[in-house]
Image (tube, rainbow, N blue to C red; front, side, top):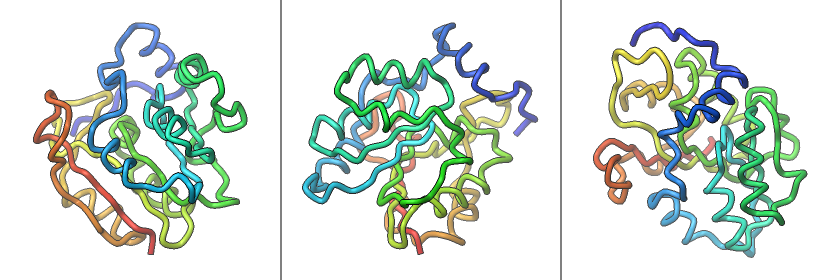
Length: 202
C-alpha cells in the first residue's frame, strides 16, 4: 500500500462530504448489520457505540427498533448533523463530536459497530484501533461489523483495504473470533468483497 497523502482530519472529511465524495454512504443500513441487529433484544438496552459513524444509518435503525443506549462518534459535524436531522428524537447527548481514540471507557460499551470506519483510517492506526475497541468494551463485549475483504494496493486516501491475515494480527491479542467470514448478504456492489466479523473481547 502506498503512503497516505492527505491528513485525514475533521477538515478532510468535511470537505469530502461537501464535495459529495461519499461513495461509502449506502443511504441506509447494510443488510449484514440489519440481519445481526434483528436478532438482538432491545429490552436488554445494551450500550452501543458506532464510531466513525458517518451519517449513522446503523444508529438510526437501532434507535427506531427501541434501543435507547446508542451512541455515535465522529469528528465531522456534518455527519452527526445528518443523523440529528433524520431522527429528531435521537438524544443529543449521544451525538459525540469527538476523536474515537480519545473516547472514555467509563462506563464501557456492550457493542461496538464497525461500518466503514476502519477502512477510513490511516492504516498506521489499525493496531491502535483494535486496542481502543478492546479498551472501550466490557469483558465479553462484542465488536461486530464489516471490513473490506480485498486490497487496494495503490490507494493513497480512503477507503483502504486489507487481508484477513492482517486483520487477525490486529485483533487476536484482544478478541476471540466468533465469526470472521465473507458476508453472504452484502449490497450488490460489495458482494464477495466484505468480511463479516463478530469478535468477543477476551
